[in-house]
Amino acid sequence: MTPMKGTNNVAIVREWDADTFHRRVLELEAQGYVSRLETYDVTPEMNPSTGEITHLHTIELRKPESNQK
Image 1 (tube, rainbow, N blue to C red):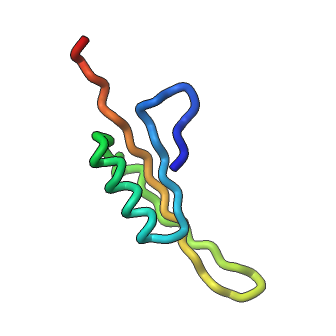
Image 2 (cartoon, rainbow, N blue to C red):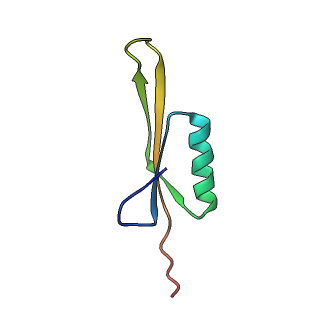
């Protein structure tokens, strides 16, 4: 998970392992973050030496602003 600079209400989850990716997204959603589904992306990458294909899973989550002061 990579928080964006200058803000505490945005997180980007980037993981090669699908199980770890989904677990981290669920953890953040439990903390009140909302997944921005339009940012969900799966990028295939191939190791040129072995031909093995892995997938990078990415999504942005935002924590809604509190209107209470």
